[in-house]
Length: 396
Image 1 (cartoon, rainbow, N blue to C red):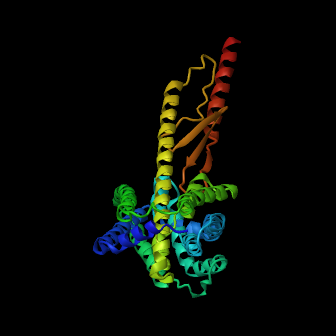
Image 2: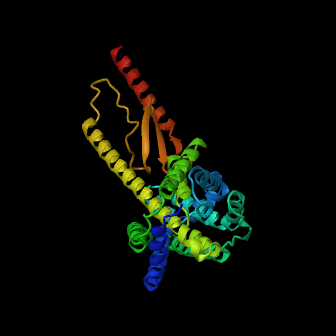
Image 3: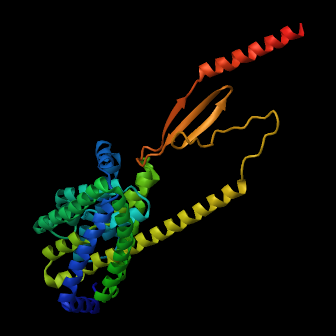
């Protein structure tokens, strides 16, 4: 059963300082818009079009977001002994589309930003139909969800608030790429500060958040972690790259809690709303906490890997001289005439292998440029033959 002290604390907190909460809400909306604009500066139209033409990553992300997460919410509600009202709230959380916080986490995890923003936009658009369908299918066990109101206006505004700043960022990246790189660096740091600010504000303004049932606390804490883990495992099983796996994981676990809160306010009367309003707040806190822990762990791994690579390269040193009569393998020596070349030598015919690194998930494209140099080889061989004939004639 619900803790009465928690209900009183939550109700009093929600009714107190409405002006501060409204100011915080609008300030957060403006800051998130600026962050999404800066992240849009990393998006390229050709790569977004490539993802749409090859939608494997998009399909995997949508299955995780719109199919796996609602099913997970239903299983969690069945596993823990929660009230019917709380069970419906858990299912509403699982049925929401992806949130913009996933784009910030994807950037700090070196994920595919083009895929991340595409997934967030597509899942939000599809949420107009999948949200009522999933809520109706999974909540029938507890209540009649036929009268559930879906905030289509809020979902449409969420799409606009994502697409418009991203489009502006894409335009800046197209016209002024140097300025876009600066805005991206500033916006990424600013986005990290926004995440910390949201987490701290949630704890300060909702002091009844932690005075709740153990089952609700466990559900709110493990749900985001299950989403991150499930999204990554599924993407790896279908042979997506590690970069896309991190992206799909963030898109799966990070939900749009603004839409969730609006749905709960439209569906539940005030006396029941106080019992469920802590669930989206708790999910927001734990999805931020789990995401920040993943970012910290990844950045530590990235830093230690780079240090180990530098130390190994320094210990290896320059290649040893093979000695007289030996042959030096120049397969990994660079050539200033070509971008990032790799050269090797086969007898008298040098081969030049050029590697172009592309950010697309198709990997590294390799092009082999072979110069036969037949004329020069023929001249060298003719010169050596004439020299040997001259020496033989002189000896005779």
